[in-house]
Length: 463
Image (tube, rainbow, N blue to C red; front, side):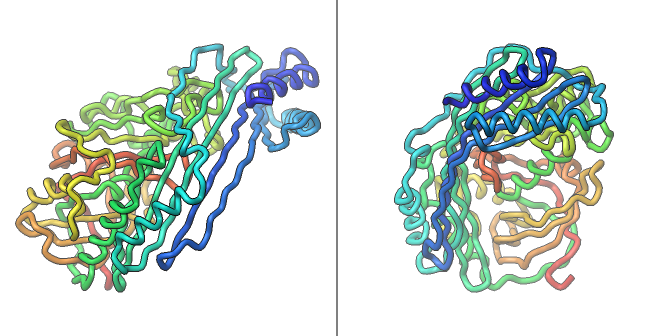
């Protein structure tokens, strides 16, 4: 059976077992994921998994429950409906049930690459070898992965949707002594991943990060490379543009207010790459502008949170939305106007702290500041103002008169992410967006390098 056949069969079972008035929505997804990992400059693991998931949400007699399973034979589907129906009868009444998605058109993204969907281990190993060869004898570690998703949705209101998508990603580091350099990229096609380019970038940054000095904490002008900007976008998504947190007044977002610099436009754009064209509730996914020219314009909603505020779903229904809220998971910071160059930011690769010409142009404008490669271990201190604390990693450099002059030991920072991008705080945007992979395939953050007037570093290597 196709995914749509399975979804339709579950809807029929619900009507047979729970009656014609029961409301059901079913999402069926086949997921093929393959991962090639390397460490100490050799491949140590190649794994692949293929599975089908069936998720049912059922509303009957004013009560709602959800269940899932992976068995798609008659017995497995029958058991899924029975246990979900039993759970619904034990749940409290659900007066805020938003109803089912009505029959609507869902357009496919069309982003499917057969070579990526059915990539053999050798194809990923070739990119790992190119990465390792390009680091020139340094230690290398990381992964190359490929993913294929095929899915369908059906509900008892007669709405159906289908889609297929592929994704490839590579994330690697090169190590010179105690210094690491990183390069990562997410793409629609495995052929878009150039292991040699990524390896050369990681190695150049690792060598340039050797023998770092310690600088005092303080507020520094910064250029954040795309990997670091990706952390900003991830936290904006989880805590800022989340419709549930907005409704609970736990978000900084104030639609209609100029909260960001006019150069900032943020768009959640799942059909730009590697996402099924519908969400878990069957709502069509589409580009949603969250910030336009500095003005906050929207937050993400599923059917429940959208009904609460009277705006409807924005196509962000997802597992866990009732607890964590609907999260935009394909966020793009639009690049500055001008020639875009290569989509991976790979043009003009040079050895050293500055990996490409796009970053170099921003660094050249700094009289004194810091070039930051990456953030990690970031944690929220205040969700309302989105004050974040975290650490730098994979390379920090002091910039003087537009030139990186020395490597700097890692900092701890404490910064309000919206304030760092507030009106007047953004001094420059790169022209080459780079898509950063998340730990989960289908989730990514795309941004160019970013120059900011100040970033609050609150601790150094000594405390």
